[in-house]
Image (cartoon, rainbow, N blue to C red):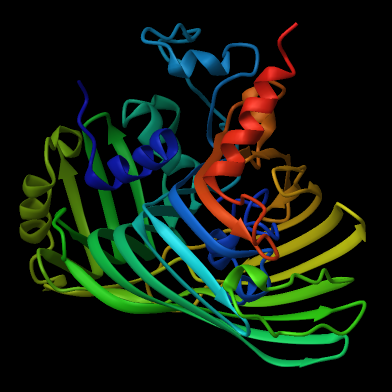
Length: 474
């Protein structure tokens, strides 16, 4: 089996094994509870819930513009088959868009364990923990993508001079423990202002980045790479818990226009009243921070390096690659044992309009913030999501533009306390080429405001399930 370098491993791992990333069909709901803090921590304080306990929340997303499966050759349920039968073309089950456009990839996985939120009048407190991974590849030249996909043996690209100057690769795997707090700092008649913050202790497990600032290269044959005038930074860690750590934060604000004035007086948590809005506007800053890797970390700063690299295709592990890199560029690079890698930072604006009774219209914009030397780039996204929202049933239909270019449509449903959804439903129906996927779910138990004495929770859940099955008996 052909061996590839550690950079290639990260790129292909992201393409084939990795997430919305924003979970548009869930986080903007008035029943989102603790999951609403993932898009805006201030949203908790005016939730329709006074207590929300999530057992597990998971999200898997990936999108790229290079590797794909032809829509005629795959059937999505085959991914879950023990022996999937994908059509093979030229010895491969995947194809590539070979054109002169730069290639990109973003992938994300989030798994949150037991989490909770409680709303007490003007205050709301939440806590969650989980494991996240994210990888971004930007400005990957088509010729580099082709050499990764087909190997150096791709003869049409051999003996041609190519330039590199903008390639950025970054990958992170980290654990997260988060505490959220939201507060209504102004409420007068029909106006409502709230602010919230999530403080996160992030524990780095593994990180990698490559920044290319300039180089030219050519491939004379299927085993050799000739590199000239290389300027780059390359850093990575081994996979260990507590390789790095930092404090990061999300911060958000919400304004709501209410139809009438309300009171905050209550004796029990369940007596809190929820008063719906005419519309609300939210602003949030997400994943502000960078993990400082100090253990099992290596960073190379390469300046104006040149080399003829024979047998570059034969590396079987990163240790051999690392040793050869240090020797090959000795005197042309500086090696250190720590580096910082930024989280996928972004700013988001949310607008939610209460159309009538159970119908809401939402629009959400997410803009990645590209600052810092090395970071995982958060993709841009704008969406429009109609939703029908009731206590035990909800449906969302998100329509979005990924990176403001690629249209997607999604679907999510909440039945009792289980939510399942996707922001890219077309990938499940073979309507277009398979270039990525999106899937999320959440299982929880919660209690609505104003529900005292109404059997809220497991008892009501059980009763409704019994009625649900009984009415289907003929």
